[in-house]
Image (cartoon, rainbow, N blue to C red; front, side):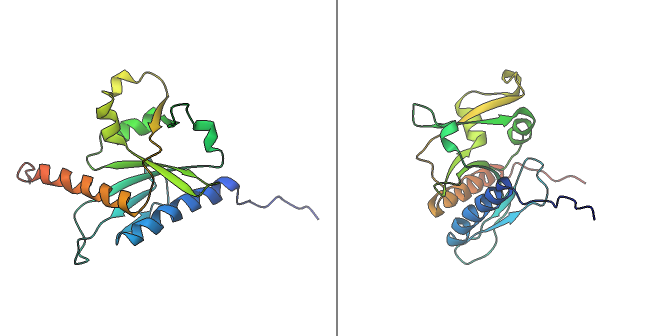
Amino acid sequence: MVRYKKKRRTREHVIADLSFNYVEFFALKAGFSLEKFDADYGYDAELYTYNNNGEIENDVVYIQLKATDNIEKYHLKSGEFSFPIDKQDIELWFNQTMPVILILFDAQKDKAYWLYLQFYFEQHGLSLNLIKTKSFFVHFNKENIVDSDAIRKWRDYKNDLLLQFKGVIKHYV
């Protein structure tokens, strides 16, 4: 009888699921919901927000999750974390209107850090033509810890953007 190796659930699969679960916990505590994408084409999830009456608000915050068992690999002397991202993802995120939040999950310490990508690009004067390599390192501030307060900030970022669109967008037929 020939035995074939069965497919395995790897540690990478486990920590990826843990990272989603971690963020979802805080989203739920904030009164919001997090919807996971089945396929990863640059986003892992969408954050849906609700007002104080529990009514859904317009648009979403996009979430990209990165998980590691070895966060020290990304630790800098400055206290920040430096993490590589692919240029093809940067192109997607750079042109996204709504906030894209990149999350770095430390599976060993059960802690996560976040970065508002479009703001990061603007803050550092980055444009697509300045990034010449296939990957680019972004820096996470260790103070930006994922919790319910952070998730409420992300909602504020989204709603602030929506206010900027009022009266500007024209729908054509």
